[in-house]
Image (cartoon, rainbow, N blue to C red; front, side, top):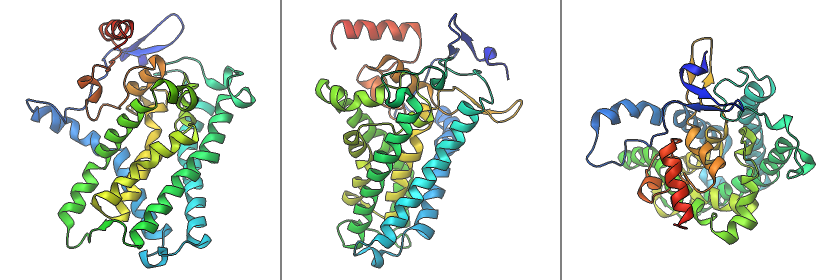
Length: 327
């Protein structure tokens, strides 16, 4: 594919799309039904369908029946941890292998023309962005992900949450499944603004922002405190009437769903004339400029609070003016 049909490349080889980034037409007034209907398939496909199906697989084949989770045992908690590790390795490696190891599409559609493995830096462990990112993901990210998952499943089994029966409360169940990505977006925006405060940024969130040129393994390369805050999204399901399957889905949206914003490419080629939009641009701009796009655009919170950057020169001027005035 010719990426120059979709964007332009500067003198450094960095690629920028012609179309500025846009938020979803979901929370707008007056409503835009035609735009909403056109956008709706992208709400489900491909990611949220994949994550929901994976949650069903976990619920059916990985976690035991609720009555078996009333007590903690290495039998089910260890199994859950091992499968989470293997799933993260497989899912993340698919993107890393094709785009960053095989470099199957070169720098076509790549925002930053450099590949992290080509630019060693003393900022990272072993002077390698990928090595540090993989280690932080596996040594902190997946263990904390699994720990919170175990805690909530144990809580459901012991009556902590307001457990619903999908058969009797199918409408509530379906609605909760539909709003899982919205819950994630709201939670992510809130904790993201929190960890951009001076103290937490210096001691916590700066770890994630070392990856100025993010790649798939940057997705969960965080400080343990940030991992705790990020995966705490599962606790909404001990407050709302919910179900363990939906709680697992919530974590899969957070854990596996961190990939799209860090893939580093505007389009992922699937064939000679086919490609998919990983929805990476909004979060890439956050990694590039830091103080913009705290959310991913599903809820236009950044627009409402004046921190949205769509990649245009006008948006960049507004950002510089805001930072100049310390707003």
